[in-house]
Image (tube, rainbow, N blue to C red; front, side, top):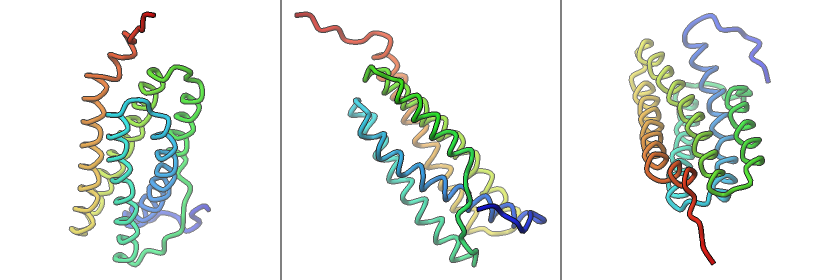
Length: 173
């Protein structure tokens, strides 16, 4: 559904953005559940499970934000999140090696994660500018959650996933 009312003030932009990234979070939640089953690394699965918990928490808090701020939640398509998800699905479908699939999955999720850090940080700044302290803190908390996952994914990539892809374990018979 398209927004036909237009964006004339900062509040309109915040409201529309929160609708879009709530829809994006819901789509990501569904896909992450699928992607977790495709991961081979137990540590990657654990980080993705934590990320899924954050996403579920974000969706619940965003829905509470709509109620608190008296925003009519109408789902807006999120073309950026859809593009990230489609790209990840295409790459994962092309990966035939489980070790490379883990690298691909981690990299795709980090791309999504970086986008989400940006949108939550921006929403926090918008809310703060409008003197919506509780909402600003909510969006800042979500941004911090995304940064925490990003750090865990970076550490995992650096110390396991990428290394395994460079030098796969060869089994001799």
